[in-house]
Length: 147
Image (cartoon, rainbow, N blue to C red; front, side, top):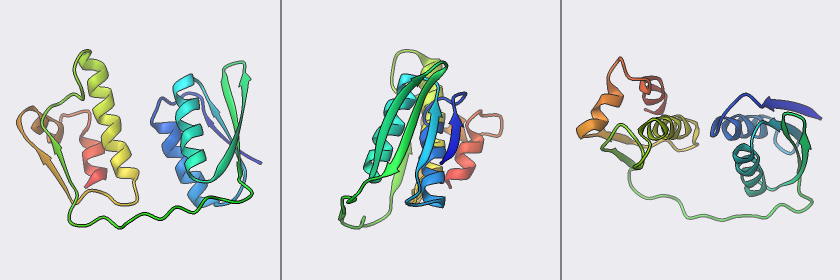
């Protein structure tokens, strides 16, 4: 069984890395090491949505998640999306409260968008959101990957 060590990464990175590995090696078991409860919950939820059974073990510096293909994966049928997908960003933080956390959440949201199978057709930045598309922005790399 291959091991993916994400103990030093914060969400959503462990989910993104797990997704990449599961896509590259579909149907193969995988052990994912994560460093906190949030990553444990998110990776477990994601793996379950992809038809994997998850066994969690507490280890010294986090959790070990053993992902194995379920015996009879559930078939999901979804309707195709219609029209263009537009993401509207009107600020440089996500949510209200702690601005530093809001910046991290928005930056991670943009990186997560870049990793999805169907990227948005348009990113629309208005008001303070325009700052994210400037060269000196911490999120410019994520914006570049997304579009």
